[in-house]
Length: 100
Image (cartoon, rainbow, N blue to C red):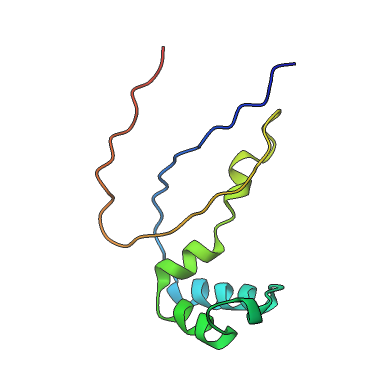
């Protein structure tokens, strides 16, 4: 068995939000149901809800479960990461060339 190797997985996923209200409502509901110790946070529940309601991008970023990207991949363990959504055109980041 080989030694564990830490890697970083870089992806870009393009999405179309067809119902911003439904997305935001779900993000708020999940935040309210989350086990958050608000005494250790910089804001409170209602401030965080206001931030989600004010930004579709923040709501989407809060909803995405990036650990599922590698779900079912043998020999790979999810160790953490982050995800955020941005409005507007995609950033110009060249896709890597395919390996032969």
